[in-house]
Amino acid sequence: MSFFEMRHVIVQFGGLCAVCDFSIALGAGELVGLIGPNGAGKTTVFNTITGFITPTEGDIFWQGQNIAAFPAHRVTASGIARTFQNIRLFGDMSVLENVMVSFHFSMESNFLLAMTGSSKHRGLEAEIREKSRRHLDELGLGHLASEKASTLAYGQQRRLEIARALATGPKLLLLDEPAAGMNPIETIELAALIRLIRDQYGVTVFLIEHDMKFVMGLCERIKVLDYGKSIAEGTPAEIQKDIKVIKAYLGSGYHAGG
Amino acid sequence: MSDFRGPAGAAQIQGNLTDRQKTMLNAAALLCVLGILALFNQYGSEYHVRILNNMAIFVTLAVSYNLVNGVCGILHLGPNAFVAIGAYTSALLTMSPAEKQLNFIINQLIWPLSVVQAPFALSLVAAGVMAALFAFMISFPVFRVRGDYLAIVTFGFGEVVRVLCNAAQSLTNGPLGLKNLEPYTNLWWSWGIAILTIVSITKLINSSYGRAMKAIREDETAARAMGIDPFRPLLLAFLISAFFSGIAGGLLVHLITTVSPTLFIFTLTFNLLIIIVVGGLGSTTGAVVGAMLFAWGGEALRIVENPVDLGIIVIPGIPGMRMVVFSLILMLVIIFAGHGIFGRREFNWEQLARFLSRGGKRVGSP
Ligand SMILES: Nc1ncnc2c1ncn2[C@@H]1O[C@H](COP(=O)(O)OP(=O)(O)OP(=O)(O)O)[C@@H](O)[C@H]1O
Ligand SMILES: [Mg+2]
Image 1 (cartoon, rainbow over the protein chains, first blue to last red):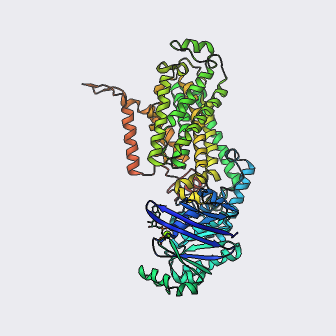
Image 2 (cartoon, rainbow over the protein chains, first blue to last red; image 1 turned 90 degrees about the horizontal axis):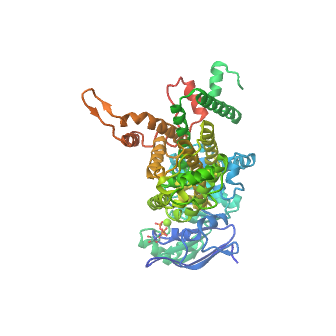
């Protein structure tokens, strides 16, 4: 069985088939892209994997289980983390606290220990704080630890979303348009960061992106979605030549050669 | 280091205090509070002692209420139910069987409540537990919904409990209520519980559990994506809030020595809402200050309900005028300080030190 696999997944919103018979298999350590015109159903695929939407039909196999019906928090606990297309930080909390939240679900304490300020609990808190600081340092956000998350620049907010997702300890990371709104330099740095995450943390990465240069340069394999259907799959070179892909993109004003 | 050497010492105070220093300062503050309480206990007038007891009870209620409404960002409108359940539980346990027989003249109190009697301390624990049990029972319907719907559901449960206080005569003695309770509540009890509530809830808020609650307040979807099942932190906040509110109910009725259903009408919830909004939603410091201002103001503003003698004519006192004044204060705070007195900030020694070392000219930005 594959590391991760979606089989014949269908998501229907009323009459609209947002994802129609979508299948994909990811190998451990792969870096795969998901592209397609606006409204193609890419985010819906991510929402389905992460338990925010239960598919109308189909199965999602992960770690030997069918997680199609798992609620979001259980999917995360099973080792799949994500970021959001429209950044969703805990705006009024500090950058450090944003990352510390990710350690809550795996913390082995209880509220009585917390309320009485027991030394066991304080030890665990200190550990979480330390780990979170390290995560921030590694992602180049260490100097912003005590800032309020909502005050960060756009590119930094996207980075913080990645830091926070990584802190949940995933084996599969889903990034929904991580480069959106970033300037060219930030985009280059982001590509390097994603490679680092894959190579050093050994995390499999599945990402959605509209920036073709970014996707073609970074991903080893690309899946193309149009009107909820998979229209192509292959290496960047193959995708760039695919006539169906070119048509889909020309139709919505993009050019695959980007 | 404790030696204070002019500018160097000032610089040290400006920097971060160690945990040890903070513990010492907290202990010193606690001693001060205890000292003040001892003074009032000894020399204070009955009037002042009553205000102080009221303050403590409202502090307990407001800090617990703020845990749900301010920290979790949930509009819960039924704390009056928790207070009512705690109040009746505690009262029915401390009354002697003989006193109960005198009280329940129309309907008999159901067995075994009619024969049991427990010490005050135990009755308070039972009050908290019963309120938390009730919170647990209603938590499933309550947390299935959010926002306005949750507000309506909790408001509904608050009303149901109030109606039951009137209707379940063989349990509550109906509209007649319970009279002649022992006045067990004194400054030590009321402030002891208030301090316990503040300390334990503050520790909870500053822990991973509190961060999970705030994360849900900030963005529930993101919190779920970080592995948090929203139901659990919300339920935890709800239960703890109910527990301390129930205890406060027990303290309240043993202060005024009677229980009647009218104590637990929606006005109680409304007052708590005013307190935490004026203090700053999400700030425990704000809840404490708001509650103290409210309890003090409630007494001080009695004059607005008294008849006014203008020499030629006497304007008769208007009962309920205090609520008008409170509502005005609420509106003014909302207009001029949208986030209340403290916003979401908390008291901390470092900021106080910074404030003092600047000669009190300007408070450091949060
Ligand atoms: N919760 C929902 N309820 C109803 N319709 C939805 C919902 N979520 C998405 N859709 C619809 O499903 C289709 C696919 O949306 P989706 O957000 O997955 O597209 P996308 O490929 O991510 O697009 P974009 O590139 O603009 O982010 C769209 O037509 C959208 O309007
Ligand atoms: Mg999308």
